[in-house]
Length: 498
Image (cartoon, rainbow, N blue to C red):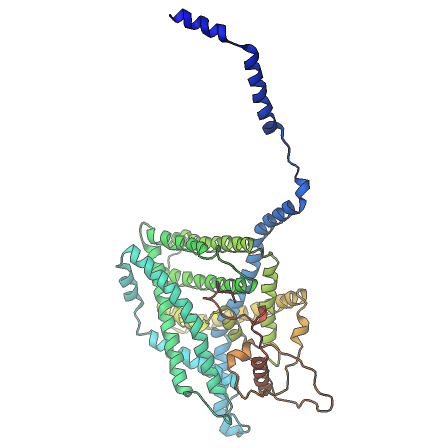
């Protein structure tokens, strides 16, 4: 039976038919093996794709240039609180003490800038005194007794609260400054300087406690044995990518997010400094323990930088934004710096940085002073001499940093062809609206130069009147669409599209 089946199969075998099938098989697969690519027929499409790749690779470099420049802007504003602000407060106090001797002339006891300096100094002194009643060790042990998941939720809540506090805090401080320096001949519609002052003190104190809890949570994560909390907290940074890269962004919104990232990175570095100080104090300032902390610090910094690179690279890719936009952002920050250094500037430089980036140095400075004074004991003449030398070093660092920033800012503004805007004079035409501009609007306003009438020359105004008229005119002629020079302090609205 098997022989019959074999003979039938051999009998029905057709070699020619199988050769034809094999030929068809080769004919079908030959194009897959030898087919070429004729990409030159769609040159524009593939050139655009290649440019996208190059832009994606350029984003980290351009972003880091912006981050570095913004970081040193924050450093300059932060050092101002420790170096120049005490000297300015001292000069204001000396002016008050010498008024009976020199005689009183003018309508003000102090200039508006001196009033703001005294208010800042009083806020810092009161908040620092109140922080002495807050036990850092108790907060640390309360946080350490919580579970890992609960600490993870608390840390996320603290980040959201920090952004909300930063957003509303500068408004509170601006309201205080404007209420204290508002001309007396005007009808006041505020609740008074003293309520505003206590509101500002309460805000700075609460914000300093919030940052202290953030630092304590990070310290607990550093000191945990299995490092699970630190790993979860670092993975939370990558969750930020999911919430950002798949949303629509315009150039102004990306500028807001970039400013927020600069402020967040600087705050993270200060928190790491606080954590290192507390840990070194617990281990009697042994240098060997610093190397134990180094891997965790490196992990936090690396994750922060990597998340910023990935987030901005994909945002620019999905929204067709070129890498040159970060040069425009850098020029806008440089323009703010140069504008605040002019003689006719209406606001202080540190306030300008606070409004632009949402970075308020007062709460962070109060907390850092509290931690440093509790960690380092100052006793004896030698210790006070070291403190004085350290202060002189901070002043020197502040001056050198300011000089370098001014030089770089001049270069960036000149490259962006924005130097003409620095020399524009504010409009001297009074506004007919009759509304008083607040100080925040004065800071964000930009001078406009309408053509004056030849037969009626504009009267010469003082510096304060120019600032007030400038703010009122800009309120009247403000357009709903803002350019980069008018974007300020939208740190929690980075995803909003106007």
